[in-house]
Length: 113
Image 1 (tube, rainbow, N blue to C red):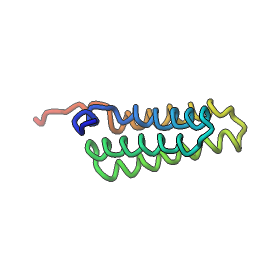
Image 2 (cartoon, rainbow, N blue to C red):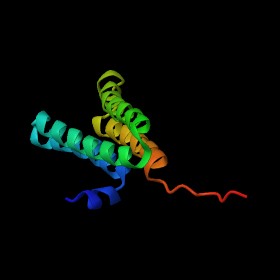
Image 3 (cartoon, rainbow, N blue to C red):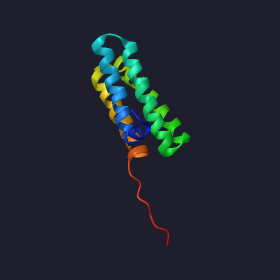
């Protein structure tokens, strides 16, 4: 995939795929490392897009959100007793929504008077 093609991909889509598909692949195959590889690859892609669009500080914040969502899904499923897919869905919607709002949403420009 070329860099111009990757630049058109919404970072929020990569966040959603990384969290949900990473879990699904780990669950479906029984190979946790394979799900982790999907999680990391999508996180790197989303981080690259965020860095190009919004800079290093925003990218660092979103990286913390992404890792935090991964951890929170485990806490909700293992600690709070939520069904695993429900916990993953909750954190995926939250992380992808925040990423959309910060990185992907088109900003309106206001002309100076």
